[in-house]
Image (cartoon, rainbow, N blue to C red; front, side, top):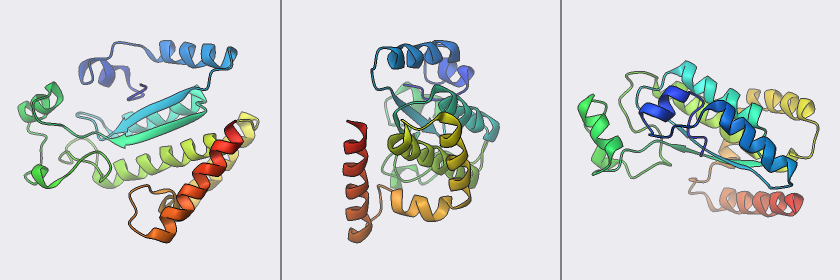
Length: 185
């Protein structure tokens, strides 16, 4: 659970007290022993700024995970995170209309804009797709291709978006995942 690239967010919002260095060591040890490492990350966390989101992307790039998953933070009722959002008036009026962590940012645009959060979310999702397909590639070439893909992120994310309703795109996504799994093993 990487959650965030900012230690302060992990400690004070997520109640996860591990440092970035601890995460780097864990991923390094996993690689050393041939264990595939997966990064679980969130965007749109309470108090998270645009710069903190960039820290999250940078940390994930430095971890070099074999794969990863990115979600939007969603404050479920009766949790400490929900209470924190209530205490700091971070919940939008339409929070009951949102269903969960796939739709988009769930909080008010207090610390980071919805547009920036979605942009950073998409960038990290693309990075995870690249790692899934190109994890055996030299990391410098991998990073170069990833930076090129950011120029086409809207088109690429359209075809990588797991929440799409279009059946043809969903079939393409399933095919890409099968291909990615074959390349992994």
